[in-house]
Image 1 (cartoon, rainbow, N blue to C red):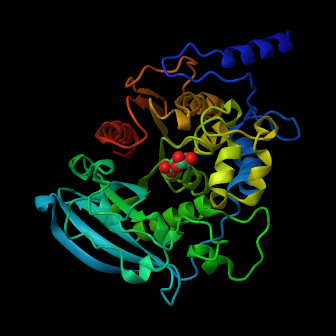
Image 2 (cartoon, rainbow, N blue to C red):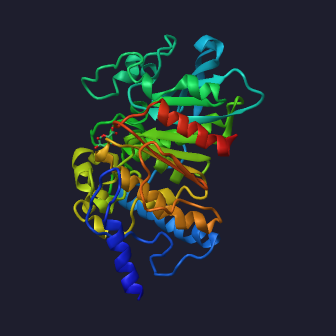
Amino acid sequence: MRHTLRLLAIVFLAISPFPVSGQTNPYELPDPLRMEDGRIVRTRRQWVNERRPELMEMFRSQMFGREPGPAPDLHSEVLEESRDAFGGLATRKQVKISFDKEENYYLILLMYIPNQRKGPVPAFLGANFKGNHATTDDPEVLMPSEEKLATYQPGYVVPERNSNGHRWSYDYILRHGYAVATFCYHDVDPDFHDGFRNGVHQLMDGDNPRDGESWGSIAAWAWGLSRCLDYLDTENAVDSKRVAVIGHSRLGKTALWAGATDQRFALVISNDSGCSGAAIARRKYGETVEAICRSFPHWFCSNYSAYGGKEETMPWDQHELIAMVAPRPVYVASASEDQWADPVGEYYSLVGATSVYNLFGLDGITDRRVPEIESPVVVGRMGHHIRGGEHNVYLYDWERFVSFADRFLK
Ligand code: GCU
């Protein structure tokens, strides 16, 4: 009987009568509540003390690598501050956050804080791809320095101001009472493979030899997000206990890993994170483990590539990354034309994580019918939408994120 039910479940997972395409081969997801020794987790305590650490160990040793502890000498310097951003809507603050005493390793955090506030405000924190100056038309935002650019990929061309402004709906976010903070991910670890000699790997690892479990770039960017949270803890205008970590695409994978490794993040949002983010690996739909390890080996620990083409042998799947956020709120966003990121697989990760939320007495998403395009769903502390259109972040996405955050961070 048990066997038949299981078989039915597999067949059910394999059929896709969904508006967003995504036919895949049959697969069976690992049960997040089943311990490696076969025991079933029945209490929150068992989850927190036994199963969650077991899964974290799996993700660390097999996928993202082991991140180090905090920075040796975190300190900050305000480079620029003005209450006049966006016509007086917000205070702009540009802060150099250094990780070491000598300030050889640092990032520049761009912050906007709404001027209309009664006390510390909640915030969105996320890394950006093209530089702080590319997230806005605000002419006061600093361009990356020559010193910083020298650490980026050889031949790096500085993107134009505001070239990614559509991804950062600052005005909307600020008017809804949130601060927003961002930094360029290359500041923490330049996104190219040079054998981990650049970025914070060098600072934190020194000459220690690397092995299969050594941290990759996603772990480094996530570490950078945590260091920003360390800083936000010292920023009076922001409530560091109400910070949502957010990211798009490779930085969506990063936001999920940051949310898993650093439980101080109050809410976690992944946008179009796809393979190795929210998408179920076993579906092998769109980007696969093999493809991502071939194109971006430096994002992961080197053990991960062993699962390329053998996703069914992975002792975990990506719904367990979502489960790691429990019991905190989690939001997974997709875009209908972004088949490379497998919107269906991203949705199923939420469904797969629900049993863990249930353990905390919380509802979760259980409906296997993938929602229609632009029909957002919020159940308990899980949120989801599929925006119509391409792989990107637009105001539509931010409207959903803000309304989701309003439920938990206000
Ligand atoms: C590539 C990669 C994805 C990634 C994306 C991005 O498309 O294959 O895994 O999410 O880049 O970060 O923009």
